[in-house]
Length: 328
Image (cartoon, rainbow, N blue to C red; front, side, top):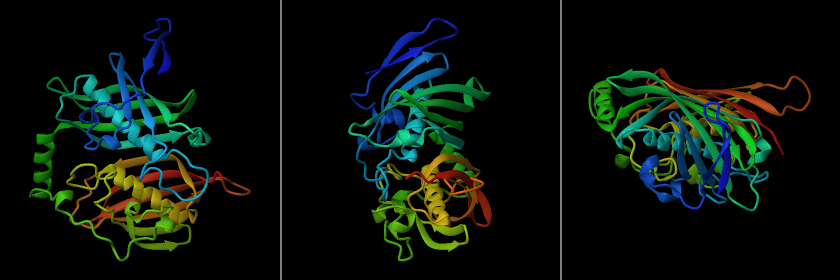
């Protein structure tokens, strides 16, 4: 159990306990596989505030598949845990079971990167979420912001925020059909085959080819471009059927392309942002480009900024920024 001191609406602090003994029901975080559920407890602390606990695994086929350096909890694992806590918290606050939280944008800032180093025990992540409705319609929340404070063990790790749209599954299906003019194909319809032009795992900081999401990589001077080509057999990125490339797949593509552009497969993202303007359709190629900027004015660079843009059918559909740290 983790004990958290709460100060609610100016009242004296009181303790709240979060359990890390078992994961929550997988439907509560919209996962199919129990192995992909990281939230272990969720409790309402205030009318628009929810506390969640998440256990970070010591070994995972996707999140722990990295080259070299001291083993760390993946920042994208922190991002996924925060996303799951936001979904579970929304349901706890009254969102119907068929609700989908579509992420328009997110910001993750890891202020204590060394705290991500893995020890002998799984990580215990506390996620303190505050929900703000920004648009209502007929008494229902349609858009909102989730702001999260992150604590790993006893120390402050960083912050995470998401701007989301709230829709039902039926509304989303109708919207997708109207925009496309026909129903969208799903990942169930896609064949999981090796791409002969897939990036080598070592180029993108991976060991397992199943975790590579880039193909046709071209590296320039502090820049790179590629086609986003994930493996649909990767059940961490595609835990259930999608009719588009999900935000987490594009974020992984941004991370991998940043490693290529920086020329350092051992770097780690300390800051991550994502903005998603349109759905990344499955039946059209998605191309990505990255440009690096040194953030340290002199001496050996320890931080590199990377801007990544995603294009489909001639239009920008998403973009991401990363601050990569070179912490040996």
